[in-house]
Length: 620
Image 1 (cartoon, rainbow, N blue to C red):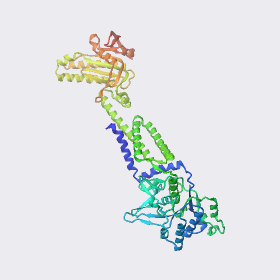
Image 2 (image 1 turned 135 degrees about the horizontal axis):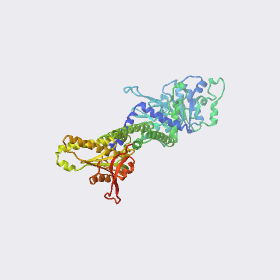
Image 3 (image 1 turned 90 degrees about the horizontal axis):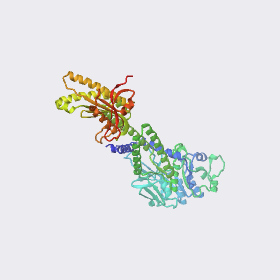
Image 4 (image 1 turned 180 degrees about the vertical axis):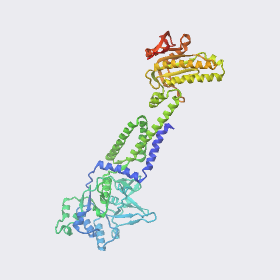
């Protein structure tokens, strides 16, 4: 299970994040972070092919009338725009209700005459599932001439920001295309059957030579060129201000601004969009650039500019992004597992910063959006998960160490070991240690002369007493081999003078053995004698067991010599039956009393080793 833990954690986090960001509150936060990319990139210069005719404060002041404007003025606007050389006239103004018959007729006739006008309609959605939708088309006079029109529906995200453009709406099973699509379809060839040439397939909407990527069923992401007032505009009043129109707001001045516009050529061959930019008409919406809200007509202009330049905004393929995210999370799982939490936190911050930088580069260079906040939260969660796993692993490791060593190691040594578990490196490492071997003399004969129960009981009492002495002096019991004891000093936690500790233990074991012999004799029990050997040197120490069984031990010539010293006790007359090597003596020579015994050769070694009887410690 642990092999697949990182993979399972990454999958759970990805699934959790996807579910979490289905909620509007979290989704909105992700949108807000993506919006910062627009502001970081900054405004760009839009195409000169587009121009906005703004129904602005200046228009209301010049005309000195209230909204809605008389439709004669809109008819005049069509005429003047045509005279100024406009290629296409797009009204983001709804003429869905009749006004005066003669005014409605004039507007329709003017549009029919110039054959370059696009009008606006709308699909009104019912307030609930039972209420029917309503299709608001331009007035019958306009529809009679089959003048092209498009809907001006705008759908906002959960935070009321307009980030997507509605390409069409379905009503009674038929698609009704947006104002921008109607404009694009008629920008080269004005035609009454323009809708029949539009195709929606393979994730894109095709018309003329444009292929618009679909976002969802019927929308396109808008690649905004800037905040409000990024597109060039001309006041509505300026366009209709010729010698035939009175401008009461000019207080008798005859400016006739239209003629200057014609002479400048600023409208020649332009797609012009007419719409309200005044706050009082409530046709403004928040966009990713923030700040002042952008007028609906300028949002249409942003969409048209994007399509005309082919600068589409798209999202990275969902499955590709999911795979990349999974790979990153798995990689971080591995990295965080190997690092300390504080270093992991630093790596996390760097990765989140790098992720934002990459997101910006994809956006600025290739107009590709990727989830930013979602990924950042995933990274934070994988960090938290790694901390939790690290804690659980540490606790598990500590429980294992405590259970493995507390029976034959001093509590303070266990605690030290818990602080640095790396001392238990699997496979072993070369360390300088001291080793003590103790063995019962003629124990086979003893066991033959006593019942198994008597043998077990006395052996238990003896081994318990000896292990207590070892543990009390910060040694560790390596193993029992029948009646033989093997103890290590200086591992897994270093000791200041492990050789001295081993000598102290040997002497205390001898003292304790004498106490036990006296006790057994007083109880009428037969006793036995022991021999002890101590050696110091380099040995391979560590977990030298199998994958199934943990065995912390030591191997090498140092260990072999220690066992040999214990075994040759019976060959020499010594008071306490303790023999140490010259290597142990070298480290404790000023702290112990010894008697030189001999030089012995160890199997496999050519050079003889000097051995000494350990008599006592030197009093301080």
